[in-house]
Amino acid sequence: TPLAPSGSAAIAYPAVNPNERTGVATFNNLGYTQTAVCYSTVVPAGATVTVTNVNNGRTVKCTSVYSLLVPSGIDIMLHSSVFTKIANLIDAPIPVKISW
Image (cartoon, rainbow, N blue to C red; front, side, top):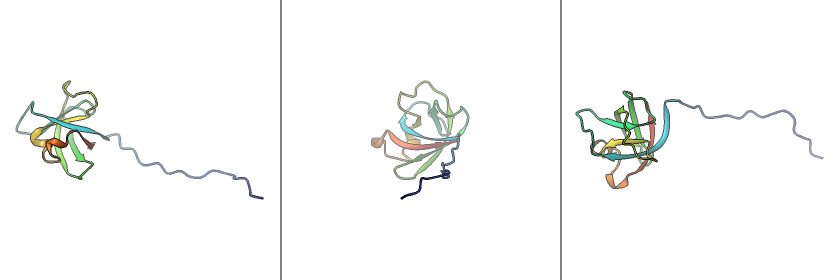
């Protein structure tokens, strides 16, 4: 007869970084400045953000500024000139990893 299990097994959970999340990115043409800025409601204003396209691995850095212009379902908006460094405009919206 089989023995009944006793004890417990260790379960490994992935580490959680509070300054990183996955989300959706799109673009707009508002707010052009000499430095790359991005609009997000999930990243603190003034933080330097690294946005990685999950589909192709390309990354871009920008400075987060708070804006109410971010549409529902979008986690971060990049200026179109910044967005084109990680994807074609016709691909928007794209899945991204956001870290700051």
